[in-house]
Image (cartoon, rainbow, N blue to C red; front, side, top):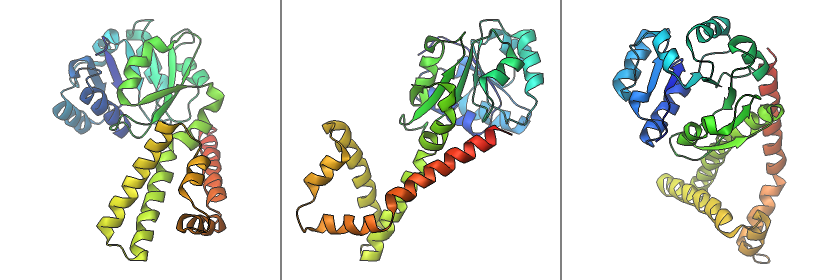
Length: 268
């Protein structure tokens, strides 16, 4: 368990997912977490559900915070939040921003050019312990300040900020492609004649097992494909038809479209 006071500015769905994960994983105790939000009903829910502090005034929790997690919308008044941080927070308190599309340079303009600033693109698999969050640091921040906290809801990849948009469209959006594939694979089983529940269980087990096989063996997917497919056999006939569907290129176009959209949103 890390020894840090963590204050969340904003208590939306992503903030809640992080809070739920770090408490469940015993990375941070509930009494180390405080939350402020303009939605009083939301604060009551978070306080009752997770036992975090939602009652203390902003100046008190900011003054005590080691990490200040900015979890608001990009169109919200970041300038006003910056003024509050300047007024009440310690100079060493680090800003951890999960605000979509707002660069470290812009954050520094709001919260202070010499304050540690960590820009995080959180993964969406927080409850599982899987998935990478993408993290970029300014010159005053270092991994030791935030590693323990971030590892409480998944894994971490430190990136040059120039790669953040690519990471978002590829890594954070990645589960979407997997969900869609599993749904399609289960539907294929039903189409072929399996009952829905059996097709679903087989699809899930195959995806989990195939990922585990890749990690355990260290082999390239092509090597496992070669092992699994005998000449003229069932598997190679299935792969031939999949190749005719433009599957690989379609997936690659999907990733590029997601990256492009991320860049467009960040330019607003």
